[in-house]
Length: 91
Image (cartoon, rainbow, N blue to C red; front, top):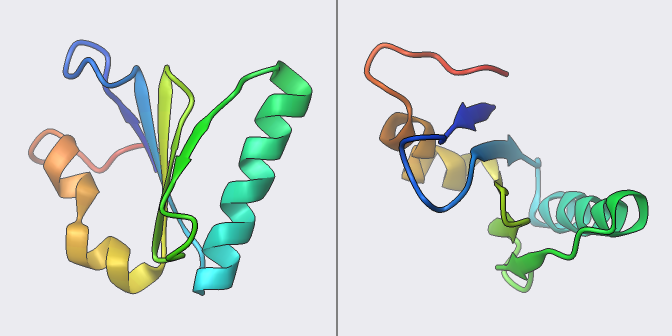
């Protein structure tokens, strides 16, 4: 899910929320994304939460990416926090 943060927050322009089926998959998705951003675009990212594998945050500067296990994503419900009431967001 992509959430447009422009004009809403100073943390970035966009937030992307994704899920992996297991802790191993969450970590793998996160590592691959960081590697590709570095190799293809020269973007160095900050990575947090990799050791736990329940929720990894990738900060690219303009885009913040959250990769969750499904249970953790449901618990925190970031979509509800950041989307305007009644919006469904772009997937």
